[in-house]
Image (cartoon, rainbow, N blue to C red; front, side, top):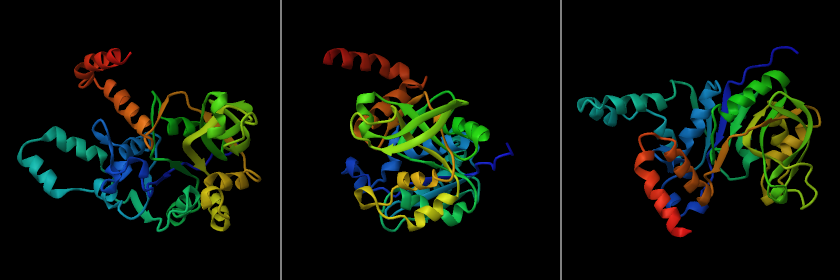
Length: 295
């Protein structure tokens, strides 16, 4: 197999309204809600950086300017930290700042779905394979999910989706893939079904919000008709692309937290706080007491 083109760019669809977190998201984008002491979007960007992503493409909407500000220099704050010799805080801020020219922002003026959001990044991505990371989904594992996907992509080429296993009785709630021949830390995908009827799912492997796609998806999305929810669905575009290109699944075995839902967001805060040696000692005892009082 010839050497695959490197995955250099990642698209982050951050134009969603976050209505499930109202009233907080009336003024604060859901991607900027904090898990412990970092915004949700920072965890996802860190995952992309760990996987070798060089260019970060944010598809934003109205009211999301604070995301762009977050990934920029704030001179007054940094000057104050220097004057007060807050070197640790300065170092922390420098680590989250993308290098000049490596972050791009484009607008999705109308909320027409995930497929449309990805299509909005077409001119920035250009004619090369790219990653898509849903910012609601943050993950915990020794090796990042996208890094594992990039490794599998090096073996298979084509398109790679990250999948996890769910209870078979819950498969009707997800986008499900059919399991084919094993390859690396995953398998070939034989089919994709969005929210199959109960008892008809080809497997219990669901797509978890991480994608590596070839640029031909843009031409498909450009003329694609609206699907479920009267939106341009990425799954529909991938189904069309699968007619001419192969798809493989990377079997992610870490923990995934859906921070677009209140329960997932709360669990993420607890899980990541307990992983922190500077925080765990202060909260472990009270958490055990709280839980025991509820049982």
